[in-house]
Amino acid sequence: MNHGAGMHTMSQAMGSMVMTPAPWSPAHATLVFCMWWIMMMAMMVPSAAFFILLVAAVHRRRRRHQPYAVVGLLAAGYLAVWGAFSVAATLIQ
Image 1 (cartoon, rainbow, N blue to C red):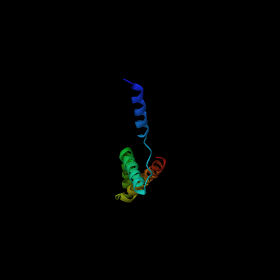
Image 2 (cartoon, rainbow, N blue to C red):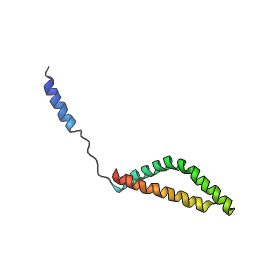
Image 3 (cartoon, one colour):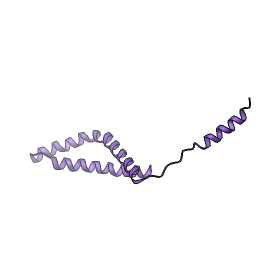
Image 4 (cartoon, rainbow, N blue to C red):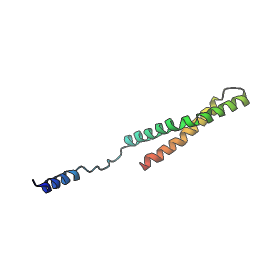
């Protein structure tokens, strides 16, 4: 048996299987951004929940009403910061 000829054929076949990155379309970039942002929210919002609830409790005690606007603004700002990170991660990726 001649193993040398088989190895040459295999190396030629493997050379044609090299993966080249495909160019991104706007739809693909949007999906990657959504993946990053949802992943960041899933990982980071639970760790911020204590702080958000603490702000709500302090605001409720001081103002004697429901702190929906303050808590909503705090959560929106938190999510916006992680959204900015997601944009950066998408561009880097």
